[in-house]
Length: 274
Ligand SMILES: [Zn+2]
Image (cartoon, rainbow, N blue to C red; front, side, top):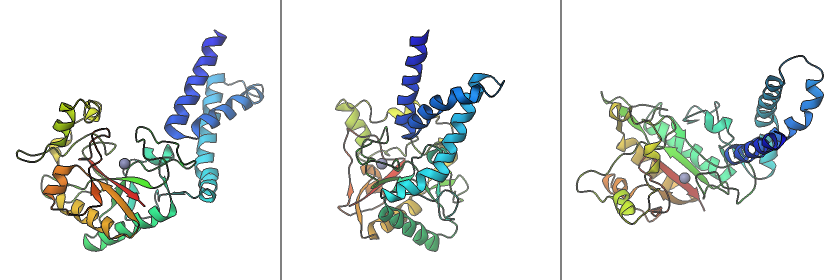
């Protein structure tokens, strides 16, 4: 019984570290202080432990991690404070997956500002960025998001009546509902699958697809966003699925194909600085 309990703790610490980076350490601290707290209350032990963990996790995330990360060269992207730039899903920030280098933060804030000037009331929705600490610590499942220089941004969409939508994508998390290649367009997903890269379209199987018919890919605003990204001096590479690059008439050697070992990029734009 003790061995199972110990193993469960280890698995949870590993999982929390993989998903949030700091969650594993906070779980460990909660385990250490648990005996002192449980002796002082008659409440159920599990409720006390869960409460301690959640409160500590939020206190660390809001008060301690941001200033410490800043001293290590990473800053949190705006959560509520910037009207042009917000997370698509607040879970990105709750899980501490919204940290970038200050230069990337300035880059994307400038893109969001320019977008708002061209298309008033447009909000850029960011997806996964990086964890707050350590170069080389990957933000799974994105292996390359490990140095504060990478950021994913959701595509723009319109509703069926041609109204521009903001902070809304057919996928609840911005990934996994794809703007498929049309007949006659180059089909990298099929090409990668034929070569044996089974993971390329894997997200489609896990993300609900039922909103796909309600939203239309907004190629006009998405193209402008990529063009504004290209105007930023420190933009190094942009990944987007080849059929969309061609469809939107985007020509720039900073827009690259990410390769079959990655996953599809016809649901979001990947931006990285030099
Ligand atoms: Zn990415």
